[in-house]
Image 1 (cartoon, one colour):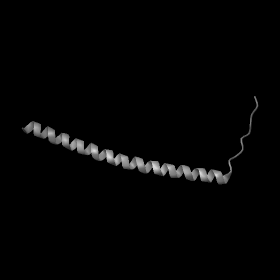
Image 2: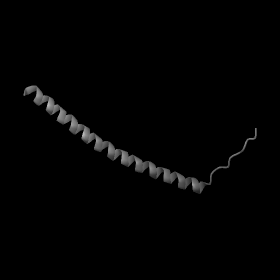
Image 3: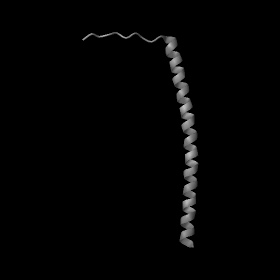
Image 4: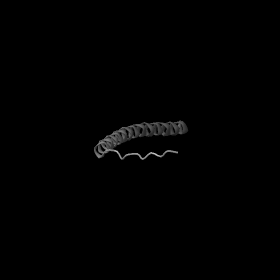
Length: 60
């Protein structure tokens, strides 16, 4: 079986590729972080409404 020796990537291209990947990771992290807190606010609101409903149902 013929083995091929792969060349190392060019340093400048590798640096640009890493920069793009880091920027994409930061962007995705920010989007997910904002979405997480938005969903948590909705979940907390739903839990509060449900607790109030249970309290009113118990005492009414």
